[in-house]
Image (cartoon, rainbow, N blue to C red; front, side):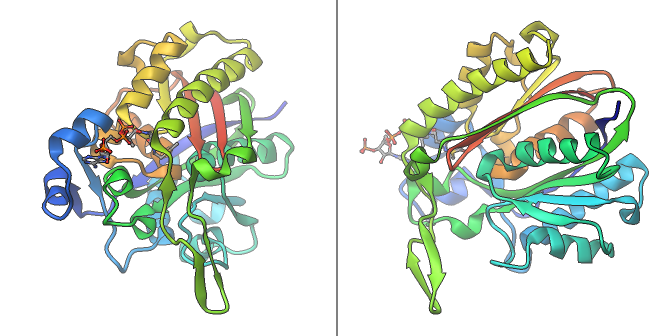
Length: 319
Ligand code: ACO
């Protein structure tokens, strides 16, 4: 039987750091409010010249180096993003060209903040079915582009970045199980409800959110989907070495861990330094914890996403 496992992880953060105090100089907010309600102290913001595919490229190179593979070895590219470079071609195709690769399938996944976990599960299916042997799965976002920087209720929450993994075929898992869920009846809870038509923006180009509804929904489904994926893998909460939930807000992470019964020392937290980087948040957090030596080969990880759609998803894997 063929399984998939993570062979390398990489990430990229734009160099410019924006602190809460810097935001408070332009907006009616404060470092104390943002820290207390969200746990966020700073975020990285891309400059105008950097697109999602640029961040994806740096993260991919890091993951390929860590896996000891060349870009040409990859036979599937999936990019999870809600802030693509263009309407089309896909950011995955642009990344493929920047990597100098040709012919392998390349496509984007649009599941907002669950996108990377969706992409990881899709790549796992490709590898298990024999359609791919070495997949590059990337979460890359420039959410700063869809912020209304005058809306203190949303713009303080998000940041830019990318994270990537190389998933390779092997005889042992790797990925034990994945669960993907969606409920489009909650589309209005978190959205960018605009599009381009006849050369004009119709609707709004900015992120809109019902914060308290999102909070409650996220905690509920992150608990449910975590339990579902562990049951599907025949594992229990006690087996989990590290929980990496989507990094939306420290209070969501704490509430999720509490409901799942996972101690806070086993939760990887990066939202304090990165803000919410949507589809990039899980692979960014994974890369931070791999590179600082917390996550080691053999450790069992529960990765969880939740985001607009609404979508939510979990993967349980052994590194
Ligand atoms: N600075 C100062 N005051 C603020 C700010 C700010 N940045 N933002 C909102 N406020 C004010 C509001 O205007 C309101 O003022 P009022 O009482 O005078 O009307 C007050 O603070 C309380 O606002 P609430 O929205 O009720 O604040 P709440 O405690 O719910 O916190 C927050 C807001 C942090 C957004 C919270 O609802 C939350 O964390 N929700 C989850 C949303 C989230 O994480 N989204 C990420 C995207 S979703 C995802 O990734 C799955």
